Length: 476
Image (cartoon, rainbow, N blue to C red; front, side, top):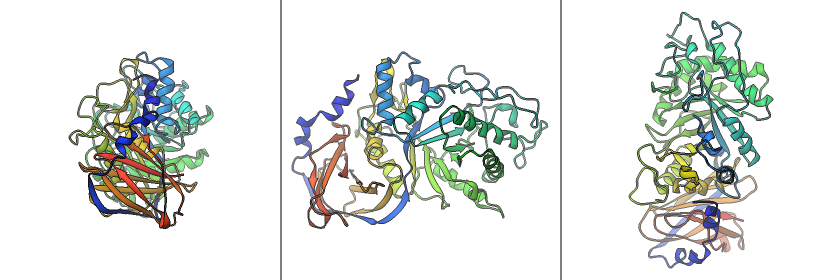
């Protein structure tokens, strides 16, 4: 798929009649939306380009300049593609940039935990710095800088890989000293380098999947140990004068992150008070319930890592990489877990797997149905939106709804069944005569705009959702 992907998305009008055909099932189904009952604020949607995946976008494997611009627009331009507003950068811990490693800003051991560090800044950061510049120019709101590990010399195993703990946290002493303050300084310096170079890091994290001793960069921690470091990091951020929010802890699954909450909430000086966002992943367990905190929560990484790249299946058999599967993951996380942000693992990459939303193999730009499922939310639910009360009377028609800061309403209807559903949608307070624009993604269409409907008395209109499809209705 070349540049024609954009035209293909928006110029399928001749086929719209097939979508708006008379429903083959359902009668008396209703959906109610009440903008007066509001829940969490939404920060946005996005992905990462860590471990040199940013370089894939910038032509590492030969992607031509015209397609580099295309994939950037698909990811971050809300008028072209998904309009992602969160980018998750990896703070490197390697003393090399070989293979897909992310280079550290302090590649050499300074000689001890209290020695003066020798920081290095290349204005490139494994391709992530120019990516952040390009993303901000297209509408990015949030840059989440997250370290998978401290540099190896700061850890108990003297290795950025294979687990190990940060030297100095509870029950993890090192002969080289306590490195907590040095690690906090290191993270803050990363944000400072970006700031001095004209790009703002808005959120700062220091762990990734701390329950898992991976063969790649990573660091172990429990909730109590994380809490110890958070207090040090918070003081360091405050002293720096940088306006950056602190996150923790990117547990490998939602249950794993919940298990860390006791440590974060404990003590006379609870570390949770210094956090702005609690982050968790969806791998070991999905975000289907609220974490034990009143802080914002993000599902900050999840992907289908099980099979080959499947770009064209919105629904085939309910597989882990299908678009409908991910539409449901996002809706459940927003509605049932109350998350404020939802991120896939990789946005775009040159790969043969489903670990990315967009594939760049053979110098082409090939968006997946997962990508368009994200876009059904992210294009129309913008930062600052509030989730609002929404309910369906039919189990096969699931619903979520949001009110944007500019007053626009976006309601997502997902048909889980094999037959077209027609439902009466009623939005409390919506005046009659308001145009409501539907957009559809399914096996046949990618965020395709359909014919607008007009609300009647009581804010009601008829919604038509084909089998195994997602339709977002946006008030305009």
